[in-house]
Amino acid sequence: MGIQELLSLFHNGKASAKSHMKNLIEMAAIDGHFDDVEYDLLKQIAKQNGVSESKLRHIRENPNEVKFELPADKKERFRQFYDLVHMMSVDNEIHPNEMSLCDLFAIKFGYPKSSSKELIQAIRSNIQNGQSADETFKRMDMYIL
Image 1 (tube, one colour):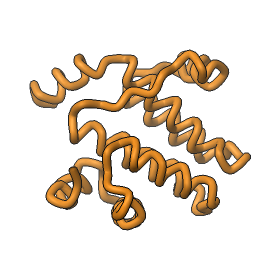
Image 2: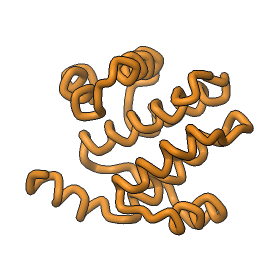
Image 3: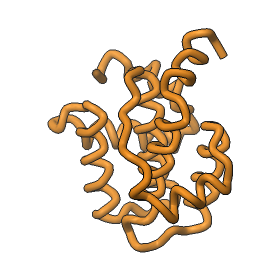
Image 4: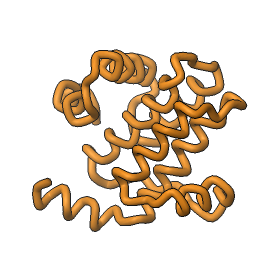
């Protein structure tokens, strides 16, 4: 991990990680089912972001305590959006509410509404092909804000 990534983590801090976990929980639950595969992915992403399982449970039980925070860093913003798309599609079933929420997140994250569906589909394809968020970002950097 380079100095820029460390600084980004420091500047975004736990608040951004909590916001990200809340967004992922919202995505997992929007279809009315919070499957084991979704929860496993949530725990994995939480661990990568330094969020304990007990903190994750607290966020899930008290979502109103966590406010939405958009990372200032373009790459971190993309990683979080990538995780949201991954959460939407991890159970291999995309509910219309999940797609609508993902579209809303694309706009909240600053991506153009006119190309949000294409961005989501491109990310899904990269996930299906085993590409990480960083690899996908490198491929798509010139096309996203």
